[in-house]
Length: 261
Ligand SMILES: [Zn+2]
Image (cartoon, rainbow, N blue to C red):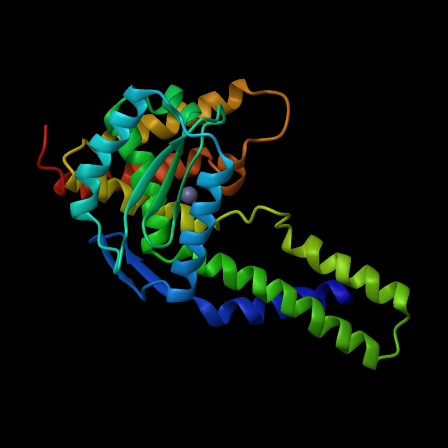
C-alpha cells in the first residue's frame, strides 16, 4: 500500500514544477530563467570543483574547448550568464554545465568527441539542459522526494504504523524514486537537450549531423565497457538507440539552422 501512496505523493509533488517547453517543430524555447538561488549554487559548486579537481594541462584540449565555446556563447541565451569553461584532468568521458554558464569538461571526453563538432554536440546538449531549466526540475524532484518521505511518515504515524514499517516505507520512497545519489535526467529532458543542442551547434556553424555520429560513438564506447557500472555521464544521461533515432529524425529542422560548412 505504501508503495502506491509514495508513488502518488511523488507524482503530485513533481507535477507542480514543470517550467520549460521546447517545440521540436520549430526549435522554439520557452522557459523561465533559473532562480538566482540556483545560479548561486551553480557557481558555488563550480568553485568547489575547481578547488578539488585537478585541471588538465593539455594545451590542445584547452584550445579546443575555447574555440568551441567562442562559437557557442553568442548563439545561446542564458540570462545573467557568467560563462566559464574548464577542462579537468579526469579519464571518465564526462562534461557538465551548471546554471549561470559554468561548464566543465573531463580530459577523458576527447577520446569520444574527436572533433570540434563532436565537442560542440556534447557542450550544446549540456548547456541545453541548463537553458531548459532541467537542473531546477531535478532539484524540485529531489525536494519532492524528501517532502514525500516526510508526508508519508506523517500519514503512517497517524494510522498508527509501527516504527519498523515507517522506516521500511521511507526506504521504499527512496527506492521508488530510484534516483540514488545521481539524479538522471528524464527521457523527455534528454530528447529535448539533444534537439536543442543540435540547433545550438548548427547556429554556431557546426554540421548538426555530427551530433548523431557523436552519440553513436558514445553508445558504442559504452557497449565496449562490458563490465562495471556505467560512468556518471551515462547514468545521468541514459542513452539508447531510440534517442539517437529521434535525433536523426530531427535533422531536417536542425539543418535549417546550419549556415556553416
Ligand atoms: Zn543529457
